[in-house]
Image 1 (cartoon, helix red, strand yellow):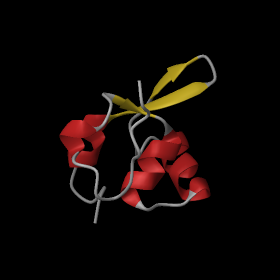
Image 2 (cartoon, helix red, strand yellow; image 1 turned 90 degrees about the horizontal axis):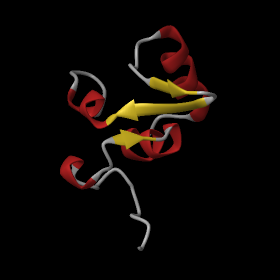
Image 3 (cartoon, rainbow, N blue to C red; image 1 turned 180 degrees about the horizontal axis):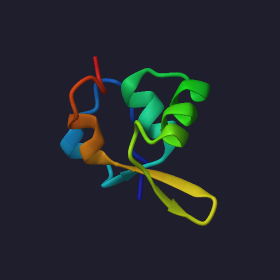
Image 4 (cartoon, rainbow, N blue to C red; image 1 turned 45 degrees about the vertical axis):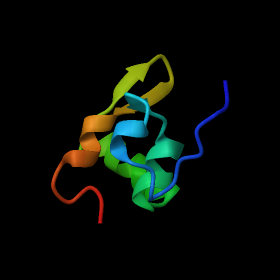
Length: 67
């Protein structure tokens, strides 16, 4: 299975249900520190699986998340 190349132009419906922080950064154009700070503060809702963080795709549809 070929890995999906994710960038700012990838349609939301083509994204996985749970995004890694790196995938979220590629879609939103945000930086690493900013993304992890927003996850830590709860401004970006996320799920934790041990040390792994995943961001639900629906977060991208919240007002102000994408430009």
